[in-house]
Every structure is written in structure tokens, then in C-alpha cells.
Amino acid sequence: MRKLTFLLLTLLLITSQTFLKAQINDIELPTVIDDTGFSTGPDNSAVLELISEDKGMLVPRMRQVQRDAIVNPAQSLLIFQTDGDSGFYYHDGSSWIQLGGDIRNRIQDADADTRVHTEESADEDRIRFDIAGIERMRLQNDELRLSSSTEMYFDAGFSGSPGDKISLNGNTLDAINMTGLGYEISTYNDGQGNLFDLDNLYFKSEGAHRWYTNVLADGGLGASSMVLNRFGNLGIGTHTPERPLDVGGVIRSSSTVPELELFDDAAAENRIEASLRESGNIIYLETFWGDLRLRTGNTGSPSTRMTIDGATGNVGIGTTNPNARLTITGGTDAEPNDQDGYAQFGSITSTNVVIDDNEIMARNNGAVSDLSLQYDGGNLIVCSQGGSVGIGVNGSGSIPAGYMLAVDGNVIAEEIRVDLSGSWPDYVFQDDYQLRSIEELEQSIQENGHLPGIPSADEVENDGLHLGDMQKRMMEKIEELSLYIIQLNEENKALKAEMENIKNAIRN
Image (cartoon, rainbow, N blue to C red; front, top):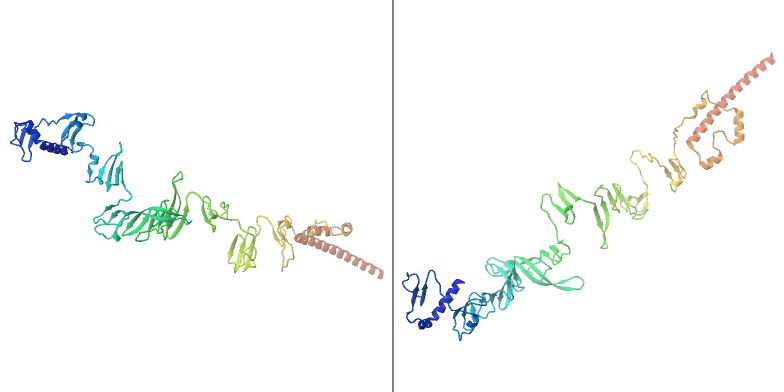
């Protein structure tokens, strides 16, 4: 600014040579006015040279009203205004211009439609760059803005297609090899017949579109490989991502221990919730803070099918609250010829076993089949801690209380062994056994209609026949009968002996 001011002052002095000669008749120009005493003459390029080390040149000083009252001011006339917007002013032939003032509008071409200028209004605090009357770039605060029609290039050859805003291209003019950032407009169909114009920011590499901020636009030299749309969805291998990350292809991890982590930044701990990883050819699907659930569906609304409880490790199918190592709910009753039950082992078209909530059924291609338990050996232990077994009964109500086995029907066996927990009736043969007399036995039969100690017909009809107990009672009666026979035999022998004695006495 100082150089510009001095140059203008010098020019004004040169153009005022005639006026100076008229006022200072005793000074012959060119000349030098030297306040130091060391000058040998004016510079060859100057009509007047002023030299001083402690003084300056004083131009006419006046108020603005006095300046404006000058009649027909000459072009380059210089004054110093003392009031208002004070400072040096020169006349450009049509108006007074302040030296150093209004510089914001002085960088421009001849017709002033290409220029650099600053404020349009007070305290706007911005610098504008206009090309052909259109603002192309603006520097405002800490932002550098380009207009929508402005292109910026960083290359040696100034190349790139019309839509490319920032291009990096080396020395070639071939747009196929261009790498850069661009802007396009594309039409988007939402699948319901609605069309939208979308503004797309894209990136190119070697002339091909690599990613977009919306959907794939026309004009690309290749298919997009990465898209970031206006909804914040990132697509890799697809130009229509519908989720925050949408991959149209295979996801590969080249780590020695590849892992996919699910991170919950909304949790208080800002923690990892689950991960999928591989280590030592073993795949780990892990949850760190809760259950693992498998959900499926074929109507667009999935349901929970399987749950692994995070605290216990219990597995639930059909339930989210498994209370055993494996809990299955929600099945149907097992039938011979249907795909039902809770769990099936084997093919439905071949031999299989189906289980529901209270039944085990063997089937073979839609028909009932034999169910084998411990077929190849081993003992089958049933109800060792209580309970009963019913065969042919309709339910537990048909099993009499206190019995381990109830059979409603015939039973065939080569041999049945009854092992009584009480004593066998050999006690009948003990010396202290109180055997009834024949008379007492006769009287009991006459009074009760059955042997003493043997259930009556009514009791058997109502309570059934207790096989083990009856065998014991029958053995008791058989042994008592044996004693009666022995007694009769003793009495018979005594009678025979007495008869022989009588016979012998008669003979003699």
C-alpha cells in the first residue's frame, strides 16, 4: 500500500509540473530539493526529487465540502481530507477515490464482471470470487465454498469430465484414467411408483464410479462398488443399500483370528454384546451379556425358535425360558401318520420315533411300529424311586394305590416268580404253631363259608387276587392240611393197633 501511495504521489507531482513552475519561478526543473546536503542532483527519471531524513511532503489539507468545491479537478489531483472518512484522495477524472479505500472492488477485469470483492453489507466478513458475473467461490469464516457449477482440478493436464469437481489426474488428458470427486443428479424409484431426483456425490478411480452418496447415477463409466446414500446406508457391491451396511457379495476377514463383533454403544458400559469368530478351525458364536436366540419366519415377521439361556446354558425350543438342559414346548400330539409331536428321530418315510409331552411312539412310514427299549442288552429299570406301571390301563387312576404294576388284560409267561418280603409259611411246622382242631376248622367253615385266613369271594371280586399273598395263604393251608393228615394217620394207626389187640383177644 505504501508503494502504491508513493507512486501515485509521484505521478501527481509530475503531472503538476506546469503548476509548480508557475508558483516557483526561481526553481528550474528537473531539480532536487535536498534536506540532507548530500545530493548531487535529481534522479534521471524524476522531474522533481525530494530528499529528507526527518521531514515529509505536505499536500493540501481540506474538509470534504472544500474538496467537492474544487472546480474541474484534474485527473490524478491529490488532496488530504481531514473530516469524515479522512485520508488521501485522488481524482480519477470522474470521482474522488480514497487511496487504500474501497480496495475490495478494485481487483477486477475491464468490464468488472470478473472480480474479487468483500462486503456486500456491513460486517459481512467474507471474500467473494466472481467469474463472468457469477459468484463461483466464497471464503467465509473457516469455510471455503464452491458454487454448484464450479469445478476444481488438481492435475498437471487440467482434465476430467464435466461432472467431476475435484480431479487428480497426473499428466494425462485421458478421462478414463481420471481419479476424482464429482456431483451428479439421478432419478430414484422407491418401488411404489414414486420417482425422486437425488443429488449424488461420487468418487471415481481410473474413470469408474467407486462409490456414491445416493444411488448409481447415469454417466458412470463402470458399476459402483461402494455407495453411501442419503439415508446413511453404505452399500458394497450394491448401489441400493437398504441397511447401514449392505454387502452384495462375500465378506472376508483375512485375520489369523477373524472376528465379527456386535457393539452396543447405547449400553451404560458401552460394551461388546456378541461376536462371531474362528479359532483353531472352531467357530465360536458368543454372547457376553444375555441369551442367544435364533429367529425365523416366512411372512416377514420372524419369531424366536430357539434360545440358549445366557446364565444357565439351557437350550429352549419353542420357549425363551428353558428350565432344563433341553426344553421343548409348543408341539402337537404324536400320531402314527403325521408330521407332529415335539421331537422326531428318524425319517418320516422310514422307521422313526416321535415324542410329545407325554408319549413316545415308534412309527414306520406312517404306520405304528414296535418300540424297543434296551433291545441289545442292559437292564430296564422303571419306577425305582416310586410310581407305578400300567399296561392296558387308561390312566394312572386305573392303577390301584400301592401297586407297582397294573395290567388290564391277559398276561402270558413261561414262569412267574414271586419273591415275598415276609416269611414263608414253614412256621406251620414249628412246635409252637397253634393248629386249629378239626372241630374248630369245621365250625369256621360253617360260620364263614370259606377257609380261615383265605379271602372270601366278595373280597376277591372287589379287591382282586393278590397272587403272592394268596400263594402264601394257600401254602399255609396246604401245610395245615398236611398236619391234619398226619394227625389222622396217627389216629388211624392207633385204631388199627387197637383193632388188632381186640382181634387177638377174641381169638384167645
